[in-house]
Length: 450
Image 1: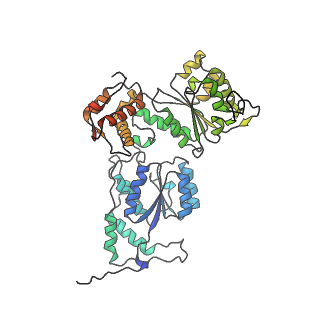
Image 2: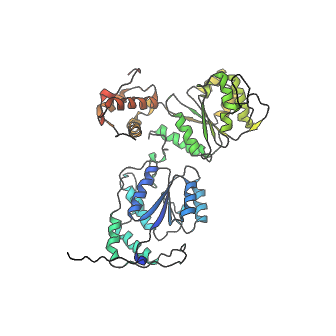
Image 3: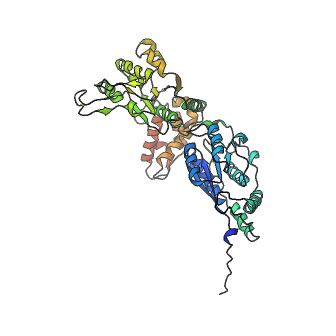
């Protein structure tokens, strides 16, 4: 057998692996960019928000940071300014391509832009002109960077050696192996201003009413302003509350929820404000209430319209001054809580008629968000169906609907709104058994009237 000579490049000639941070709340975007940069021999670390990106940068000292069009926990402009001041050596690149937020182009800027362009290839609404980088340019740039880039953070501060002629084909092959994108981006728009790019991941739907909810959530999230969410049962009010909390500066503190309609009136006060030992029959030990448990975070009062009038007066005092008293205790407790309330009732009309305290209503309804009935945005039905089927298929193969099944769903009036749709689909998945496709026979609306 003829011996094959194997030539091993010296360490100084090998491609030094670089580290990139990708900061985005969109998991799909992070994964796809990680895959593409991995094909270019980057080591990639993902961050869901600005605070995590900052921590990772302190630890890893990356060569580059790619930031999405918004951050769920920090104001984007302030983050970019502070990051550049703290890490001037990091090549900071915003997905939106805002030069004011970016650092001066680093030695691998074209390579990073090329990775973004590859993701854009399946987004037909995006303009590729801003990232028109060719593979040949990437190869050339990487060769130059390998020859000229000085790693100022290494102890020896050694200059990388230019790759040999034998290494050039391997480098080009690595560039050409980059994996193309496979799915359209969600809320990561890569600099485009398409309408759907403003949608929050929790709020599935691209109808105007759904995009307006996302817009309102973004506007109010970073403030302390109380929020009142109104909408029919099953329309996603709790998801809106969770989105407001997630995008707020309080996201690292708890979101405490309580359903005012689910707890008996006699116990609701103790659940909200807490109680001391022996405060009432059965109180064998003291307990911290839901309001106090939410200190530093957010309190979500679901179905606030069901709260008894007598308890509304005590809640009003807390809303006004941030102070509470546990049941059976004279001590005043100061609590820092952001309030979000929700109701399916027309609370303004109830306040006008005296069925709800008007002074409490006006303090809760400083910023109003309305969730629509599913019948008001039926154009989102296919998107919602896909979302729920993907969710149900995490542990089993994902099922699909045939055209007849989807048409049957579109004809329904949906009195239970999005929650009813989820239950109908879950029932259909069970009825379909091992079949990968759900037909109209598996669409069972139960006791609802079709």
